Length: 159
Image 1 (cartoon, rainbow, N blue to C red):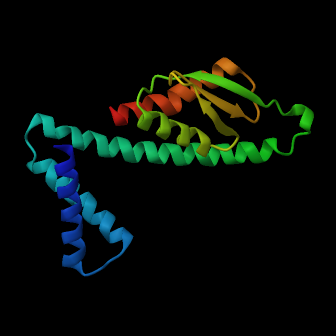
Image 2: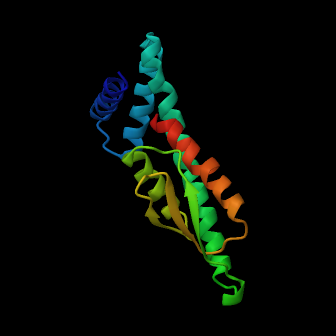
């Protein structure tokens, strides 16, 4: 049902663009938002309502991710000015709650997008991911933050 609502939303956005005669990203996004609101008003089945919680969560997660990437860029730039003796590179073994290949792939890409981190490997049993960290202050705190900031919200969106 979520797929059909998403397709309906895209069709409404395309109709909006055609009706206004203005083919821009802003106009398409505005049409998508209008279509989202219209579908939200006319959808009454409880099982179809999930779409109306996923889309705002997705946009919120994308904004959060952009903020984290920006923050990590400034932190990495600041840390690159440290003498080599102050940098504490490490490889951290992070246990996974993600089970499917798709969930693990998305998580690995999100972690690697943040500067100062790089995914080294995923264990064969898919229970652990190995992350190279440029400047590790506290291993346990890094694991908690990674799971809280990235893995938990991602799994909420995907499940």
